[in-house]
Structure formats: structure tokens, C-alpha cells
Amino acid sequence: MEKPAINQVKALELIRQGADLSNYQVEFDPVKIEALDAILLGKNGIEVPHDLIYYKEEEIGSEDDPNMSAEDLSGRRLLRVLQAEIPLEEEIHEWLKKEGIDADRLLANLLRNFYENRQFLSRE
Image 1 (cartoon, rainbow, N blue to C red):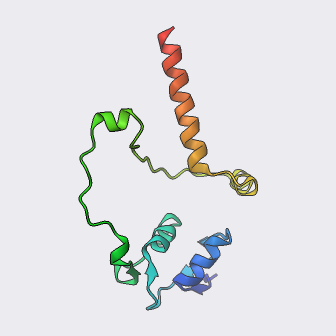
Image 2: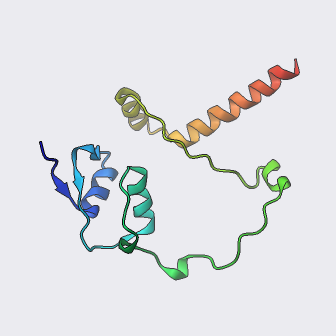
Image 3: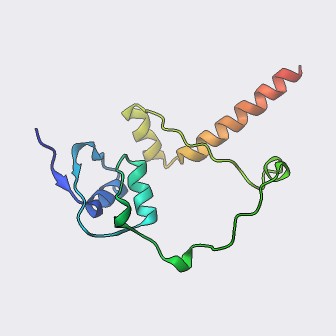
């Protein structure tokens, strides 16, 4: 069975409603979307052609990134970001959504607690 076709704007709308896009075929039309929306589509497995992404030049900082030191990281002023895709059963996905749980924060806290417990246990 052929999947119904939707454009990128409709895909964004469905994502924001929590819909599963695997039931649709995204066919891009000439409408450009903001960079943050392109990222959202990308997180949902839809790669947006570069020529359809726009951004406002004045909203992007022009200064170079400062050098990052070990002190910055150890002092937790700057954090490294780990991105992972974790397959979840539908039941867990629905529970996270229903409870309004931010999975990124939850996983960061779980990893921090796991790390601290391992450090504590290794000192004994």
C-alpha cells in the first residue's frame, strides 16, 4: 500500500502533534523552512535539502568560539553533548509523552547518577 504524501510543513505539524511519520511519504515542495524546523525533521528521520533551509543572518553570532579548556569541562561550565538514538517500545514512548518527561534530561540525570555511584563504589 502506498503511503500518503505530505509536504515538509504538514510533516512539522504532525510531529508537533506527536504523530508517527512512518505512515507518510514526505515530498518536499519549494517552501523554505527555518533551520530549527529542519533539525526537528532530521531528528525524525527526514533529511531536508539544504536549499529549502533558511535562517536569519542577524540571529547568528559572528564571533569565534572561545577555546575550551579542561577546566571549563571539569567545572561543568561547558558540557559535551552526546547524541544517541534509543529504540523504545511504544508503551514507554507513550508513558514519557503522557507524563511530560524530557527524555534528554532524564537520561542525562540517570547517566550522572550511574557515574557517581560507580565512582563511589570503586573507592570502597
